Image (cartoon, rainbow, N blue to C red; front, side, top):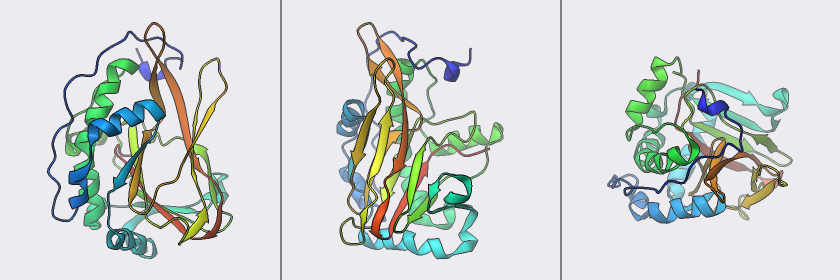
Length: 261
């Protein structure tokens, strides 16, 4: 049975999360990861639908990633959003994240704990579990014809925004992703809040607005999350977008863990 095609309000029996998030020592170049409390982040994700991390990157690392935007050789694709009615602004997919070590290392080191959270959700959603290493996930993607890199950098100026959407890219979909704020709100730009909309079966949709500071990450569902009901769990679809930037320049790093077809 194709479980991803099940209706959003399909009922799944209650299950209890098991185990603890894997302990992944922070590397010398990403020492801030050592302070992450994955149990707390998982609880926040379940409570709010989005979990806001402490800073993951230093100001210098954020600027290093921003500077890549003007290096065309690093990217496999550039999308001018208004040409496709996606909103207004520009985003670029990295051809090979390994060419920017801070991005590659961040994706690899965050993945095991992200996979732990995804695997707590799996029985609640009636879905599969995922390997605990990014290398194994990407090998599985490649075997399925999904070999194009998905980490991306998004840049918005005054009046730019992103329509509500989901980042699916293929049959293999890792259920969580992270967006990292690379500028300082209030100083580098105004407006441009992150907007998440949760569709609740038989109820009106719920909007969530998140305002990360420089270096902070937002963990959120790619397409849906489990919500406990009276007799079990139901899927609540979620989409995300960005409110219009008022002044300045807003840049974010998007870390999607599955590759694209």
